[in-house]
Length: 511
Image 1 (tube, rainbow, N blue to C red):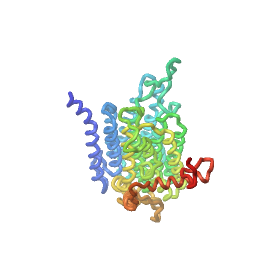
Image 2 (spheres, rainbow, N blue to C red):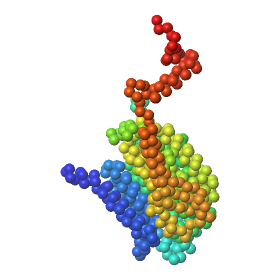
Image 3 (cartoon, rainbow, N blue to C red):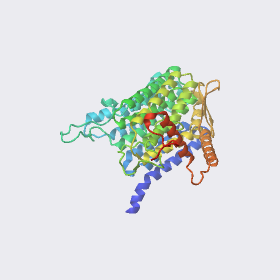
Image 4 (cartoon, rainbow, N blue to C red):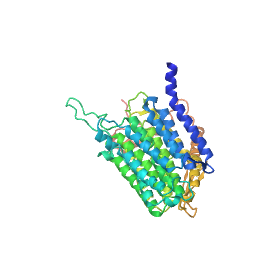
């Protein structure tokens, strides 16, 4: 029995690790160009990146949660999305997303049918919009998006429905239910406080996390349109405006929300809105920012702790750091962290493309987005949050490597559908630079080089302070205490009402 229990506890992590290794191998094989295996398979860097995002999120979620928290729907969703990302058949893509939407809708409780239907409206509406958009592509002859003349089937009707399918999942959980959350409050007797109804259309916290974890997948059909043909200016402006507007709306909603879980949800979805705005820029720099924001949103989902802070694996301090450190590392207010790098990349992409409004909105949302962190300063923090904070810092410092090996192949293979108004230069061991159409540097962010330089400078300062520190004489007071006494005596002489100085005058009568 003990062996069976150990197998059940390690099987999810092992399965997710196998999927992650397969995704890394797929990234390696598709880095040079797409691989076509007719009639269904189409392997390219974009599909490989989204497969990697699915399985790295699945692996992190499996490692940070107990096996009982993930049911068969969780694993079936990951497998179905993998199939959808690796096929060129538009009907298969539609079928995969409809299946995912139905599974997410079925996670809701059925005791309150009306509340369930309203809460399930987000994935179902997104699936309906995607069916309309990609269905129009298939009816116009683009059954395979890699067909020679598939780009002729892309028009405004198709684009608007696919864009709508990407925007709808940005809505908070209960937006269609008339509030901003799934929970409802029951009228309890006066002797007991109001309690949350568990079956009033509200999914369990683990089911909600499953929905949020794979929410980034709805951006894939929109990005796939770059394979068909370049976007016109109206399409790019619409995607960019909706992404920037959603960013601002979600940030203000997080600031005004009264429930911590609602603030955390808006903060996570703000990263998806940032990704949508980057995709709408239709440039290499914008696409890099969008792909990086996808990874950050996945990290925020798997490290969010829906339980109370009094769980057994929580701690007040780790290595002397206060419990608020993980929240700051995941908020985007701390430099060199993953959310901060994502915001910086979209700011640089907007500046390189001449879209100053998007740059200003991103700056505002990044600054205002740090305020909920001040509001939610915890007394203790779970181990999951500490791990998430460490991953955020590592992902931010290693952002040049992430962009170079995971995102740069996507930009190169979609270059035919992108504009020249903004690109990204990567120096893997130094940092990132956003350039405009004239290849002039707009913004530069040294990450690995700056981090290494900070470590070297800190070590030099420490060594110099140790070498130049005067050795205290035996029997004499330390320089620090002597300086402190002198300052206190001067203060007492300058401010009489503070009292007499600690040292008495030489002619003082001690009788």
